[in-house]
Every structure is written in structure tokens, then in C-alpha cells.
Amino acid sequence: MTDNTDVNHDEQYMRRAIELASQAEAEGEVPVGAVVVYNGQVVGEGWNRSIGQHDATAHAEMMALRQAGKVVQNYRLLDATLYVTLEPCPMCAGAMVHSRIGKVIFGASDLKTGAAGSVMNLLSYDEVNHHVDCQSGVLDEECRAQLQAFFKRRRAEKKAEKKARQAALDN
Image 1: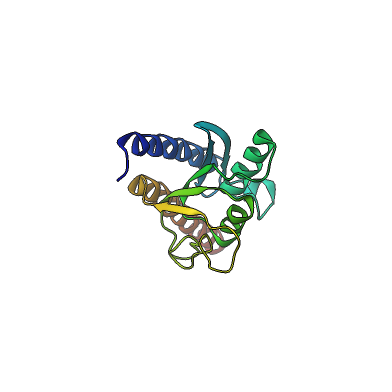
Image 2 (image 1 turned 90 degrees about the vertical axis):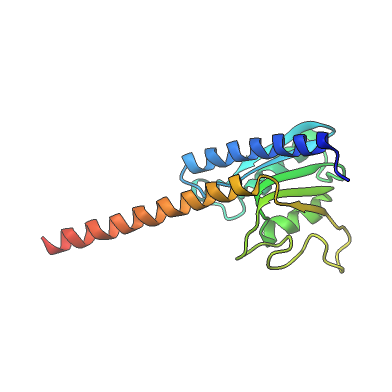
């Protein structure tokens, strides 16, 4: 049985991840945010920065893991929990296994590239030397709504750009 205190903490940290996802969106990035908690303290935070940093590895989880490793002074984060608004991709799930993160808690599932159970599950793959505990669905609706609104807006912007280009060609 889950303690209400744990649920409240999980929601608190996920809300922080949602705030960080908003930072990503403000920078023109896909709104994903991540928080690493160790011994009850936030030791790493990140948001998607791949576009701005021209770095395919600058996902929210990777940024948070990098910062946490520096704060803890160890890349192994055995007793840490990573909160992320979207189910990790294979790259990020692999980094979680290598960092020996204790647990990952995510909001929205990713039915296209999710590597924590939706498409594949690298976090508990039998052949790897570390398995990561995983919990899904924390503030799922909020996380999913944030992503859906972002992509809906992006599609509308692209449609408007295409229409403007066509109008310019027609004149």
C-alpha cells in the first residue's frame, strides 16, 4: 500500500517537473521536464534542450542526471528517484540503467518511443545488470495535456506558415 505522504511527494516533484517542461516550451522545445530527488532533496533538474543546444542527447532526463551526478559527486544514483513528465525514450532509459537510478516515476506514456513499458521496457530488461523500479501515471492528465496543447499549437503554426507561403506564391 502506498503512503499518502509518498503520493503527495510524488505529486509535488512531478509538479516541479511540469514547471520545468514549461521552461522547455518557452524555449521552443518539446515540453518535457525532469527532477532527480536524493535523500529527500532535489539534486538535479532538467528540461528538453536538444534544439537550442544542437544536441540530440539534451533530453530533460539526461540534463537532470548530469546535474545530479555532479551534485552527489557520483554517477551512480542508487537511492535516487527521477521524476519526468513523459515516459523515457530508449536513450534516457539506458542512461538510467547506467546511472543505477533507484526509481523512475513518469506522467504521460509515450506510445511511439516509450522505453519504460509502452513500446519496450529497458528499465527491467532481463539481460542488464541493473533494474530500475518504475511507476507510471503520476499527474498523467496534466502531463499529457501539456504535451497535446504544445503539439496542437505547433501543427496550427505550421499550417499557418504553409498557408502564408502559398499566399505569397499566389501573389
